Amino acid sequence: MTRTVFLDRDGVLNREVGFVSRPEMLAVFPGAAAALRRLVEAGFQVIIITNQSGIARGLYSEQDLAAIHARLHRELFGLPRAYLHCPHHPDERGVYGFACECRKPLAGLLHQARELFSLRFETAFMVGDSARDLLAARSLPIRTIYVRSGKPPAAELQSLAAANFTPHHVAEDLVAAVDWILLQPAIQAPPSTKSPR
Ligand SMILES: [Mg+2]
Ligand SMILES: [Zn+2]
Image (cartoon, rainbow, N blue to C red; front, side, top):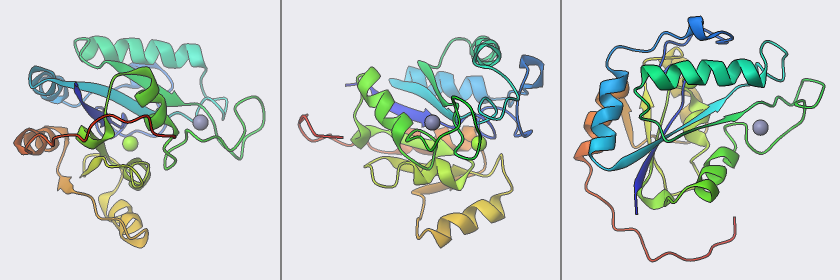
């Protein structure tokens, strides 16, 4: 069974600049592609899960996001297995304006990934620069890594503490997070059971 690393996008793979609404706004971190290469060579699949409420806010469309992810995928040498996003926001109007179950800190995108791909949460990691990235995994057996390369870390770490949540690891950036992941012993996942969501 393939092991999985879930990655938030902005602030993890590329610079956090607020809303990325055009491909030219993507600034992929030096070293990000090489870090993904190390994960894939070690047998991990990489799945990006990202809140994209800019769609609900009318800042860009699903088609724009597809173009942004096509460029990101090229810059990452095709290494990610999938990009799953939440286009919703509870305070907006229109078709995307509702309280969904996929906007992190809810776990909907993680569950979507489990249904789409062969994966086990017990052997998975989640890397994020926002408190809500890691809180999405809080009720699941996923190991969490906070990276300081995106949103101002003091406030995010404070949010995690306020939520009584301690990440398994805190790293400077994705490269350091991957260093740590590759040092973790592979957990023997319990036998597969059909569990309700
Ligand atoms: Mg982020
Ligand atoms: Zn959603």
